[in-house]
Image (tube, helix red, strand yellow):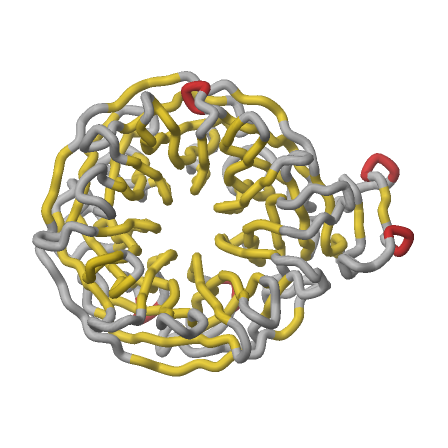
Length: 488
């Protein structure tokens, strides 16, 4: 792995510090922070999710996403140690399809490996798949989930392992979308429950009555049920309320029992030209907020930059309790993921940390991380943005707790190798305060808001078809630091 001190992209090559990994000894202690890139030259590699590795032998992090080559699209997974050095990188073609994407990954608590989801082209249709791999990246099994109709396009967006319970063995829960063949523009939200051995428990598609454009499901968690022994499944996404997904799109919180039966939902926003979307979700476990949920995303009017939009919902239900907007002072900002962090911050008041991307007229794009109080979703402490020393665009879309620090992932559009590689995975590992050596303060504004809430009674379709397929995979290799490792 190259050790490269971050420099502005316009600096001459001679100004870069580049050392071969073989020529130095990696620090024995866990690195405090770094920013790194991974992928395959000269493919376009887009990072979509990151998880801290806690149960497989040798800790570290794992990043999942999609790479685009001259011969097709493949799911790409990179596992790194605590210093950011890649242990392995593999590209996967589900069912040997050259149209395989990956959106999310989760580590299994039994220490046997990981599960991921995304989409695959099969028989001219795009389907959701779920794949389980070992700690070393070797596939264990892959399952393709059929769509509810021929000609539809299914995409898996998030995956979690269900909470352990004496009543039910550990299972996998996947959420995603099915873009229906008819009517045009219609989308159904999908929730799938499977065993960790690859058997289907249930698969449901949810939609809105008399509103054919439907629902988008983007993120999932489990949280305490008000009446059942097993936790409810809670989903973040969007609901279409107008004649087009581009007009009158509203934030969606959707809740079902562990057996797929709907509990409640909330559609947040007004009948206007401003769109709201939720992309990330976290359950709260601390203090008076235990059992509640925070959803994050964006709100955007037709002629303005997006602002971060977040909402805290009550325990066991779908009642919005607190809303907040966070705005970049110059450009647009969208939050894509969020985690709870009371054990990391050590604060009396618990907090959440959200990550996302800033982009607009004054910057090609930077990642950010914000820390908000659970109570009012307002700012707590310093707020930061990342990759500001690059003149090109960088994005952050996923975050996870890493014991006493955070890891965030997305894509870097800077050619750090100076070899014509336009896009790579981007991994940020911070210290407990969200800092690395290249971070700068984020200038923002915050305000409480209250958006109207309108629930609905969902329509449900049952889907039972599942197919076992093989997944060929090949190694990939490209890595380096875009912000130098800090071993102290």
